Image (cartoon, rainbow, N blue to C red; front, side):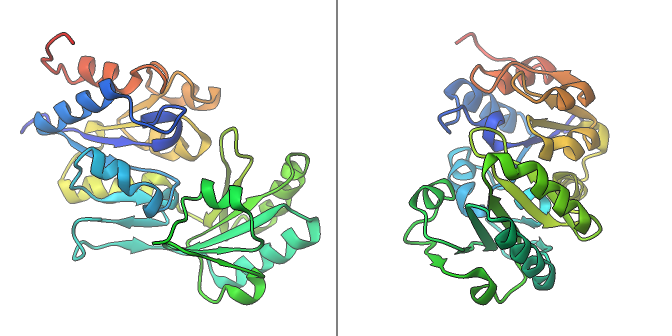
Length: 274
C-alpha cells in the first residue's frame, strides 16, 4: 500500500469518551481504516492491564506504548523487541521519601503490571484497574518496593500539586513528571527521556512508515512530544490549549466522533452514510 499511515491513539480524553468507552462511530471508522491497510496502535500513559481490553476491542495486532513510553511492547508477539525503561530504585526511594515528608494522600508504584500501593485505598485501586489477576501489594513502599519501577503515581492534595512539582523539578535530569487530566489530580513519574514519541518512533521504524505519514491523536500534556513528532499531529477539541496550539489540526471532541470524522476525511475513506 503506497499511502499507508500509522495512526497512534491516546486513550483517555481521546479514543475514550468521558465514561471510558469507545464511541461506536469512532470504532467503526478505526476498523475501516485498518481494513484499508492503515496501521493503528495505542499510545497511552496507562499500564498494559488498563489498556488491553481496548486493544482487543479494536482487534489490534500491533505493538503498544504504555506508561508514556516507559514500556513499548507487542501484546501478541512475545518475540518482538520490547523496550522497558524503568526509573532507578534509588531515585524512586528519594521521591517517595520526599512525598512522605510533604504528606501526600497516597503513592503507587508499578513494575510493569505488578502494583505496589503505599496505603490501602479502594478508590485508587478502582482507578488503577487492579483486580484478582493483578493483585495489589499494599504497605510501606520504602520497604516493599525492591525493583526499579516502571512508573510512580503520586496522589497529592490539590493544593500541594505546585510545591510537589517544584520539588520534582530538582530531579529533572533523572525523571519526567506529568499531571493527569481531571478529575484525577495525579502526578505520574517515569524515567527521563521517556515519552510517547519514543514509542511511536520505534513502531514507525518497525513498519517502515515515514514520519510524514504518522497521524497521532491526543489531548493532554503527555501527548506533546507525540503530537510534535507525528507528521500529522491532531489535538482533540477537548484538548488543553497548549496542545491545540502545537498540533497541525484540531478535531472534534472525544465525546463526539472527533477521531472518526478526521480519519474519514483525511484518509478519504469511502464510507457509506450511517
